[in-house]
Image (tube, rainbow, N blue to C red):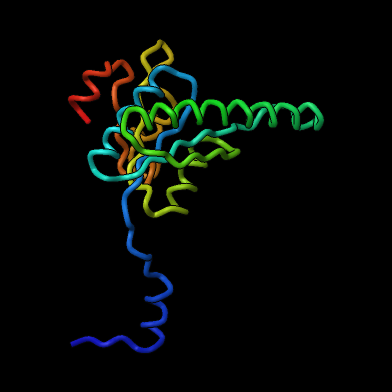
Length: 173
């Protein structure tokens, strides 16, 4: 039988995470049609698995750092727009699933923000992305997730086709 020393016991207490009450699905929100597909899919999965949903709006850095007044005004406008978009999507989530999602607005690159949120909240356990349907390709986060070990995220990523219909989402989720 192996016994821990008092120091090892104390260290284990410090590193033990409290139990996760329910897992959360994370969706990065923007104005694309495929984003709506990802949100709808995640909302239905969260409802069916008794989970939660986090909607993230990322305010990516602009290029106006040397024009402080312009930069501040642009950040304020971007934050207001992000709030409007998040609330519109939250209403849709509630309509589709009866859930009220957590809403997050953060500044930085999408990939860095997503990684930080995953580190900060152990309940975030699935990232849901929808692949783009245009000539631009599947999208930068989907490409990053598909990049292999070290390139992606530390949690499972569900990539849904951005062209799914509402009926197809209901069948899958």
